[in-house]
Image (cartoon, rainbow, N blue to C red; front, side, top):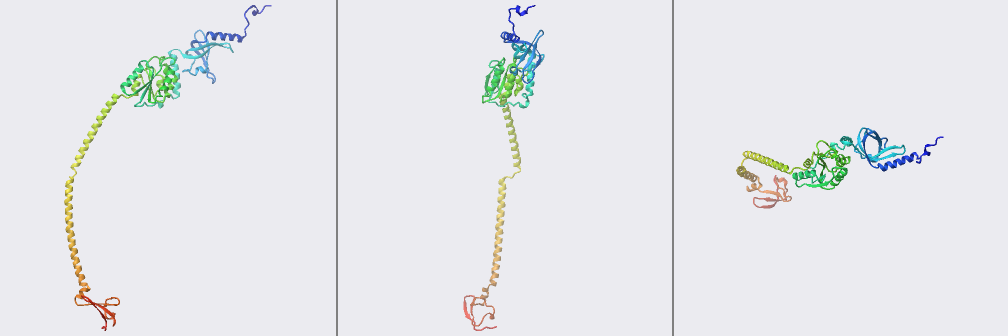
Length: 406
């Protein structure tokens, strides 16, 4: 009978789990950090966990890969089949199935084509959120108290911005927050700077940017966190990345985009020399308009003066008229007075003629009853023995009736 093969070999007999565990330990020790370039295939992200499962392949081989949600949630793009990428991670064995697998913790599109694809995907995502809407853009302040600058402290960009600001508005305050504008840590640096610089109470507008460069050089300004920080700034932001063809996400999120740092500085402050010329021109125009208005009013006054009489002549005429009226009044008063005097004299004469005293002048007397003072007009009004008072022209007498005649 043939003997079992393992009895002829000195090697120990391993279980499947022992073997997969040994392979895992060996691979993780040998390939704890690798970069792998390849094409994505059979990409899937099942369920709600958010993990990515795919295979990386090239012309001669392939390997299974997984990227957990804790790592992929910061990706600026969505992987898809056929995309060329470079993956960073560790090689291990999935013991439950014995599969060789690449555990990915970082993923980058390979080449400019991949970067553009990632940029387009992120741009669509932010646009759908309304981050680039024109309605949320704010106007720049016409006279900023201070201008904040977020850029590299070395290089042409900061020099161009400061020089232009000083030339246009010499008295403007400038607050510079230096940052890295290129490389792995540039995005985080820019985000922190945008938060820091607006804590300065006088900063009314911020310029953020750098000089020109390739798409890779400008990539920090295409990061999602940078675009969101620009949009979240409490003061208006001008994006001043020095390029013409490519538009970064920071450009789209900013309140205003300038083609170059110099152009950005020209946008945020007025030109004092131009303002002085405008003030001079407007002052001259105002002076001319005032002079013309004054001439027109003088001509109007002169025209009106020709139709207005000399008030001194009018006063003299009025004085003559008042004198004439006074004389007429005086004459009328005297005439009225004479007429009144004549009427009074005639009335007095008539009264005199009718007065009882006039009768007495002719020798007659007036008899009054002594009892009640009534005038006696007829003999039957008295009786014998009645006392009477006789009134003469001069003086009077008291008598008693002795006899009465009818």
